Image 1 (cartoon, helix red, strand yellow):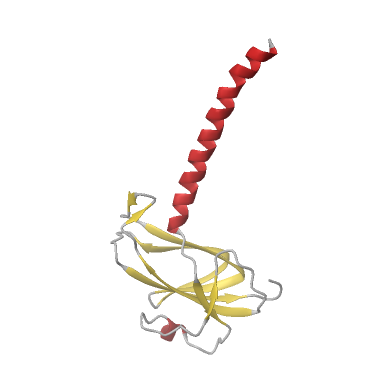
Image 2: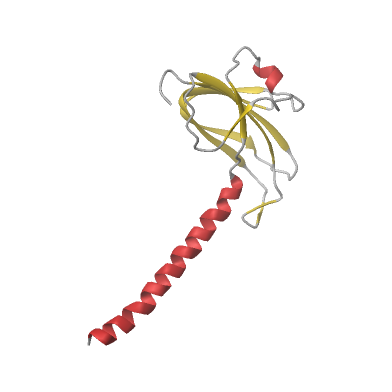
Length: 148
C-alpha cells in the first residue's frame, strides 16, 4: 500500500514543482520591468530643474542597485528610463506607472515636472499612452531623517 501511495503522490509533487518553476520563470521575466543602476549624489545643492535635463551629466555620481541600503541622510536619485518595446514578451502599450519607495520621504520630478512629496512609497503616472523608445527622466530627492 505504501508503494502505491508513493507512486500516486510522486507525480503530484512533480506537477507542483513544475508550476512553481513556471511561476518563478514568470516572476523573473517581470523583473525586466524594473530598472537598476540608479545614479545618486549627496550634493543637495543641485536644482531639480537642472537634474531633469536629459543631457545632465551624472557620470561621476555613485551607482545604487534596487533594494540596496544606503547609510546616508539624504540624496538625489536620477535615472533616464527608456520605454522598451516588450516586457516579459508582452508588447508595451497603454498606461505605465512608476512605483518607488524611500525612507523616510521623497520628492518626485518626472521630465522636469514636480509631482510632489510622497511618504515612503509613491506611485506616479508616467504615461497613459506608452510608446517604445519614449524617455522619462526620473529625479527623486530622498530625505532620510536617520537610519539606513
